[in-house]
Amino acid sequence: MAQKQTGTKGLKLTDILVTIVIAAVFGVIYRIWGPMYDILKPLGLHAEQLSYGMWFMAATFAFLVIRKPGVALLAEVAAATIEALFGGSWGVSTLVYGILQGLGAELIFALFLYRRANVGVTVLASFASAVLSLFVDKYYGYIDQLTFWNYCLFIGLRLAGSAIIAGVFAYYLAGALARTGVLSLVRPVSKKDYDVLG
Image 1 (cartoon, rainbow, N blue to C red):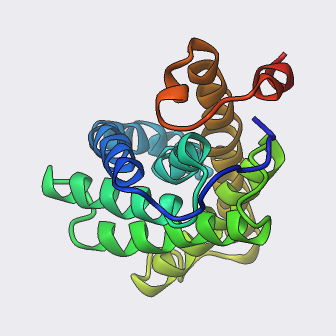
Image 2 (tube, rainbow, N blue to C red):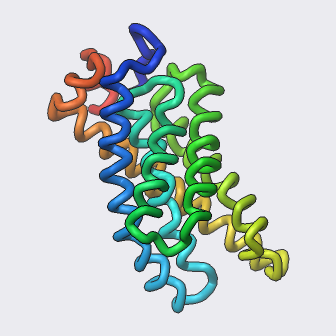
């Protein structure tokens, strides 16, 4: 999965449609995942932040499948839109989260010129989504009253959840799909792809 992107970099209609399908699946997953946040919250010490990485996964997973500029942002915004349409818990603010979370991942993939799709880059993209989501939390006043140690714990657990779910899990899920040959329908898969996956 750590191959360099070959072929045209621009999005084709097929790329957009596949990205929208991925986003639709994640939009439904996001809506279903909402109660997980509430289940973990009573455990205290911001345990619910460990579940947060799921809401960044559309961006990282879609990029691992399509590997073209704009895919991470498009997937996250579309997934957030679908979640909101299905009555997501955070209403219209879901769209703001989607834009910033998708932008965070997109910036990291752009930093590597869209040529790297290894687990390290995917984890960095998940971190960027998490960091930008904090700005929305701050704007809506969700984290204004936290003490410094509490704030550090909050951020640390969100980053950990992001790395595990939107980073490592997304990477290995895309790898499992690549091994089935399904991804060859949307992008060329080389022997190097399979070798990297072991």
